[in-house]
Length: 213
Image (cartoon, rainbow, N blue to C red):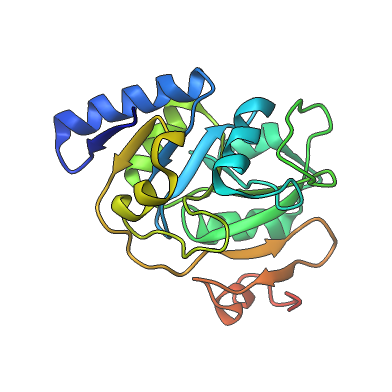
């Protein structure tokens, strides 16, 4: 039976965050609010948990899960060949609605799907998400919806779709917007905008003028 915690209540929030971190450590799935939409999360370093995440969404390995982090410093252990322009984007837009596709460290023993040696990583601007990520560490997190359905802006919508495939639901109230994060590929010499979302190409070009669209 899934457990749900009201993160607008200080006591329930503390209990929920503790229970969510414990659930992820056991290889279970949790739902958490972010600054874009609600996400379904798992231990990024548990191939079985990530597989369960993709199965809960009805999603194939060809659409690998992004990774959320609680601090930019976490990047040092996750990615390699991270350019100066990539760091400038981090400085300008993290925490926030910018996902960066980077080359992951070859030593990492994780299986997020068919990533071809890359990882899509983001630091969300949401206190509940950051607190969980700070406590647990990097998590594989994808939008908390069944594939082909709208991404949920509230916990009710996420729970209606995912039900008991998730152990813990952290209800942080409605998310600010249904607009997804913008995605920039920083694996090459010139950053490439893969998806324009909450941050426009014009805003990104103020930081990296040679951004390709």
